Image 1 (cartoon, helix red, strand yellow):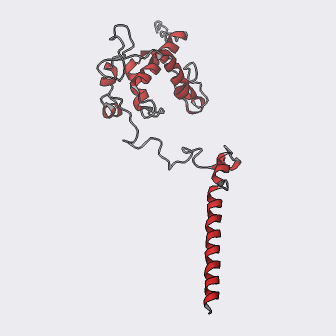
Image 2 (cartoon, rainbow, N blue to C red; image 1 turned 120 degrees about the vertical axis):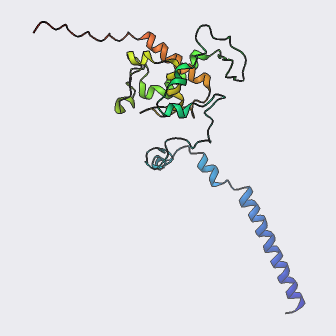
Image 3 (cartoon, rainbow, N blue to C red; image 1 turned 180 degrees about the horizontal axis):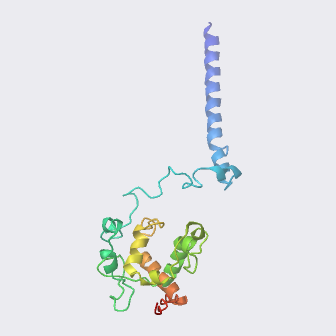
Length: 222
């Protein structure tokens, strides 16, 4: 091949490469990304069928978080093994830091030995109860939530529920029991758990007291 033709071929190849490089730069940097278009649409009709939308709709998906992946202690000791064994000694001896006579609130961070009550404590209890509890126990605690009516969630207004210690209810929130799953991995701040306990007590105080069990009729002589 003559030298002039080789030089022309080299020049043509260089021009093609330059155009290709420039074209790629335009394609990647100037043309809008399809991902940006997808993000502009918040929801597609077919997404309702994604497994991620209803992750607990299958029996093979764990109901609880993997131990150690989500903090549930909040600086407290762990009496989960005792609670799981049906013993309530620690639960019933817990001191509700919001009751009269408790130490005065101190600034955060949380110190288990010095209870500290946030200023918005009552409002947080109401909000957390409606977020996590009312779906089963109902807004007033009567066990008539949308899910509660289907699974037989107990009322929080019965004489039995009123007789439970604050620590027992706190432990129920933290560890769960029976139908109720644990919420310690979701409500991991001890203040928030006590706020729910106090909200339950407020619901009980606002509701009429359950009637006392009727005494058996005396038997007459046979």
